[in-house]
Length: 453
Length: 126
Image 1 (cartoon, each protein chain N blue to C red):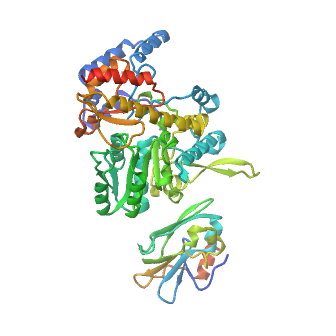
Image 2: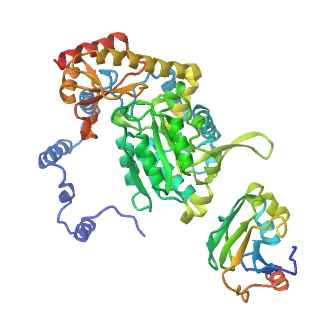
Image 3: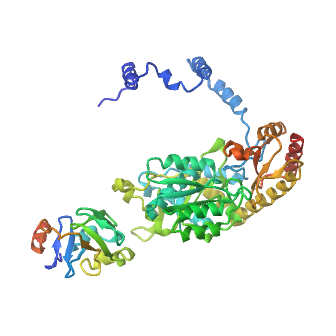
């Protein structure tokens, strides 16, 4: 078959097939004013622009962004502004790592496989889980894969997701599980503590057929759950426990393996990855070894070659994904190699003591900030539960109003929880990492005090 | 190739033994284990599950291949050989004895007309 680019006749045929008269109609959802603007911009570039002009154009566009180096960030809600030592990007940008993607003949790239093996090892050590895969796209898809694994392993259909799990994760799970015969059931949170409502959880467990209970530690409100109690309740009902963790917090918090999580997933963004407008992150996926055959993605193993030399190889990836595709429990055959590489270098660079330090400073600085902000008249803690490095405050004025004032002071303000939780109107989720200084926290407190007057 | 006289065989290299109590025991043949090479993984059904004629009741994976196991009889799985998933090499070492895979209680008198006897299987694979 000859290859030819799209001809006008091809276009017409395609448009007729879907019953529209012009390609423009495909973009009807975009406001007409914006389409007009884009058309004009393209028209201006009709004859191309010089390199210098392009550079100026993009520099001016980039300057419009607010980023973590141009404003003091107290925003978390899933992506965290931690310090990344300069060595991390210097090492990650070395030529040897440029093609970090696993090649199709994977074993020819021993260096890439070794990095992934080390990544898996450090994720296992951090989480105290028996196995970790080579990574997934992000934490949210990791959760969706974990839910499918749990349903497959238990041959049960109901998956319990707490409402205090990240709304983004819940939406991804809903989208990902479309068409599968499973039911996602939301479990209420305790309005006073912000933790999972244990009574509501018990009721859903007693309703039966529960494949998995999901627990976010810390949860979306920054509140710490009684992980061991939830784990026990899940296991008593024959369900698996899926722990959604933030790897950086494991410098201080008990690891998912220590409270007997069957599957543990998280986003590795907090391990040295920049926020970059929301991604990419890197999905950390761990489980008990008995579920290794059902785990998504790929796994790198340590082996010896014909001469007895140490070598690395892809294991457990051929069976379902290549030769038994109809039996596959996941269609994820790849991994997020470059981001996993960065996370590996970050952890190797800061070491166990560096992780503990970052986690511990985040915790203590958040506690200090919470104390300062809570003391402001009209501001009160939204939940009584213990926090890690995020906490929710009920404000006397809308969060958007406060954020405008903070923005003027050079601060990226908190997340408005009312966006996803109508009952949490005027409730703001603050995040404080080890990067924040006492002066910055005091500036936040002073600005907030004025803004809520 | 070891092909015991007292067993029946499928063209997909499973063996079947009719027990005195009316149940049947299934496994894979010596030919199959030899062709597969070193077996590294065995997946078996749950006791109490039911299978129909021709169903896949498990998986055997070796270092070079993977295959579904198909049952020539339908019925209830009344026992599985836990030793096989625990140490898959047992299927290589003793495919007809210690390496048996499942016992099925047939839901009807098994139709064995399509199965091969030892002589026929030997000439089929010989």
